[in-house]
Amino acid sequence: MTRDEDVKAALLIIGNEILSGRTKDANLSYIGERLNTLGIRLAEVRVVADDEVDIVEALNALRARYSYVFTTGGIGPTHDDITAGCIAKAFGLPLIENPQARALLEAHYEPGQLNAARLRMARTPEGAELIENPVSTAPGFRVENVYVMAGVPRIMQAMFESVAPTLVGGKPLLSRTVVCDLPEGRVAEGLARIQSHFPEVQIGSYPSFRAGNYGTNLVLRDTDDERLSAAAAEVFKLVADLGGNPMNDPH
Image (cartoon, rainbow, N blue to C red):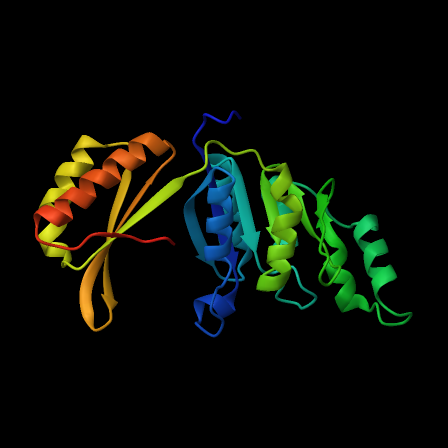
């Protein structure tokens, strides 16, 4: 990969608790934002249950399509933590007790505390590369372009940061946000015209409510700063010409 390529990634979120609504996912936004800074575009997200067939099917589809695939969830000590086995099956590899992972767990737990359930966290596909977990020791792992991480946000973030320096991205995706006090319907036609003039720029329109008033956040994204600035200037002018009060959002 080179810095000029459009590098894309996918996220596979695994867990019945996410689909049931019992647990709210907090990993998507973190991973998406961090990947953007690395020049990697998060292009697809899937959420699947703790079901071997579904996990393997989703993983094989995603890893064939994207440069990177990140998974979260399902690598803990309980019976329904089946991600490691599913990754092994997807790659056609044996699932083993990884000696490096076991050594980490043995050093972490007091004598007698490393029971059979906790040893499940030492399982990886054969040949997997471990992902460091400085929070609670039990590692994640990588097989080819698939990075397998914990579902607990604090642990996932630590794991992600341990692999971030190894990820090769393209040009970082830059963004500009123009905040205006006009409803979407007022700016839609002009926005479509600007989009046709700047097809490479991603332009999104999102309703907002601030200080008791409805408005619109107009978000522009591109890898080219000069082109992005030109498109943002056109959006600014559009809002002003329609009688609105355009403002740059520093965030």
